[in-house]
Length: 226
Image (cartoon, rainbow, N blue to C red; front, top):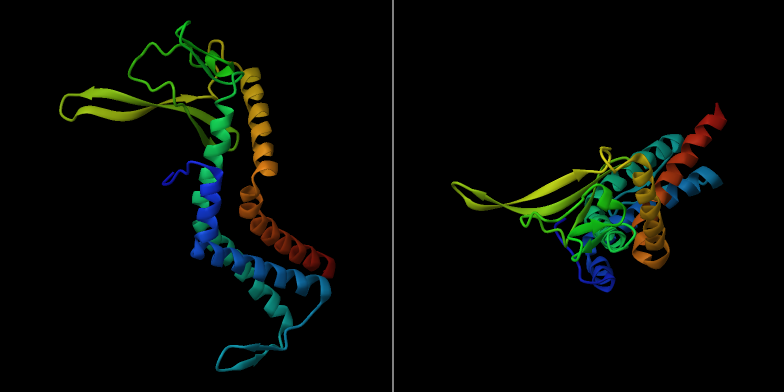
């Protein structure tokens, strides 16, 4: 992730002030609503003012296909500008997840990690790992890892900073599928909390939902017309 913000308010301000992001968002919303209007109302665009010309559309069916391509193109452009904000929101709720004592807790007296992840990472006696700041990682659909920053000596470069990864989909010892399912339930809790607590989640995802809805409506209209 290229950026982190100290608070949700800072993230909100960054999104509101990002003119390129806002322009891509508005473009996706506009073409999605236009495609929905054409599909559900049967409206037809007679003319389009292009500064110099006025174009009269006679092939209205072809216009709908053109709008489908426009929706897809706008979604790709919007993704490239919004992904960094998705990453920040992921960091916000995953940080709360790892602050849950039932999930991860650093016990200085027992010199161990407790919580369900303690079944995967038993101790933090190795001083090279920054066990106080774990990093929750997605690596695919229902694929999760836990990472720790590490410092290791190197003969040529001196101290090398790396990351130590624990694959949470690899079951061994005390870490079993039931533990991973418990972790996913906890994850779902904090994901849903982010949906209802932070308007930024809906701000980011609503253009995608609108875009996919317009494409679904177009596809259903084609099926019904056959």
